[in-house]
Amino acid sequence: MLQTRLPDAVGIGFKRAHFDALRTTKNTLGFLEVHAENYMGAGGPSHAQLAALRTDYALSIHGVGLSIGGAGPLDAVHLKRLAALCDRYQPESFSEHLAWSSHDNAFLNDLLPLPYDDETLSTVCDHIDCLQDVIARPMLLENPSTYVTFETSTLAETDFLTAVAKRTGCGLLLDINNVFVSCTNHRADPRAYLADFPLHAMGEIHLGGHDAEDLPSGPLLIDSHGTPVADPVWALYAETIAHTGPRPTLIEWDTDVPDLSVLLAEADCAAGILDGVRHALAS
Amino acid sequence: MGCAMHLHRDTQAAFRAALSTQDVPPGITAVGDLARRFSVYRNTVMHSLTDALVQRFPVVQRIVGRAFFSATAKVFVVNHPPSSPIIQAYGTDFPNFLATFPPAAGLPYLPDVALIEVLRGQAYHAADATPMSPDTFRSAITMAPEDAVLTLHPALRLATSEHPAMSVWRMNQSGMTPSTVDPGPEAALIFRRADNVIVMPVPFDAADIVAKLAMGVPLGVVARDTPPDKLSRSIATLLSHGLIVGVDHPQA
Image 1 (tube, chains in turn green, orange):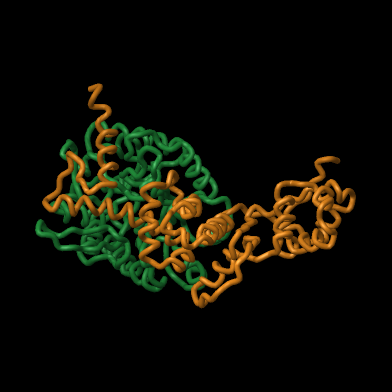
Image 2 (image 1 turned 30 degrees about the vertical axis):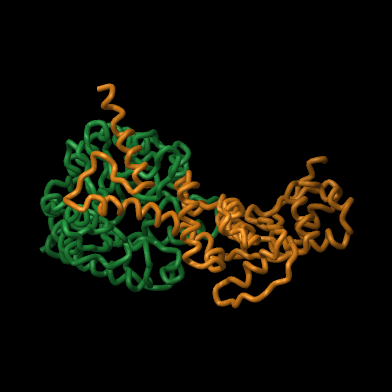
């Protein structure tokens, strides 16, 4: 089963401020990605813009609020909204996060971590089965950036993701910035993580920026999506793509959003890496 | 096994609780500086939710200043966290909260300014509908104008205030210089025009007429206690802004 129909090209996260520029600027973007929760109003300019862009670009809908890693059941109302959105826009891909964000009816608006053990594995798989059933399409699950770990974890994150993909048939969204952030924070080797990551299930790659702070215990990297992609992340991206061949790749920039030209320059950088691999494979 | 199956719920509850305190939840580890590393989550939750309020209430922030707004938003986030992941809808209760928030008591118009911002957000995301042209409208009501019930545009909102909240809102747009305003009540229609949301001041009696029409009161009933010229002027205003989208004759 193909978990994504996105082209093996580079896309960017769509921001409202870029609408006019995107319509008039010539670009080679392969797709746009939007956050599902920003398009859950009944109508108005948001939907008009997305409908207009949909005619020109492949679309990835990226959920940020379902709380797939939550202990409780998924929000049935929110599931229906996601299904309606997928039905309306027929995206080439739908993705969500390995994280939780709701607890006891409070939505915390952050992607919070979970322990990796048999209990959470079966909870996450049940939630993904349920989601894929309701939206009637396979999803991609994204690896998180984390700042702490749980003493009760019995599985490595990569083993957890491998098991989820195998049990549910979902694909994976590999956020290479998240890999670099988490591995740096936990003094782990991002290359070892990527070697263990089930790349055969990877349907999309995310690249974004992070902030850094020096602590006595070592660097603290924070996934902020407000800066250019860092050099070590570009290097890991190039190595991954060399291994898998070109895959759909997204440039994420969610805070302090710059001019479209800045995002397009980042996208060009990724496209250059993709093209290099494409040529190397062809020769 | 029976106990183990509830472990994640307990872990999550402890994690959630620690987001609201200065503690680190049990069972959490890091390579060092655990409290600082855990605090990334606490800070992100608070920052992302207060920032959602900054996005939704820019005029309130401009009036009270960044520091006051930030402190107020934090109290609101702790006591009224969102219940829905649709974060653009967060803060619907913020006007009511401001009305009972003692530090804001010196600005009695502030809750109504916040309400304008709530209504503007609702208008922006409300459903689309096709306006009736004046000609279509006239032919639709010709047969039995007394019984006609209008359907107004789903993005139309009506704001009324005991204070000059619309004037305060208007003069605190970016690029405007606030000055003194006349005290007294104000009303406004809030609606979409193309990609923008318009806040249009209207006289109180016009607001009253629109409120009745919006509730589905038949034209003939509205006309009973409204001077004919005022009713026709209100309908003309609604038509000219594309705010009448249907006419029914439920009595027919």
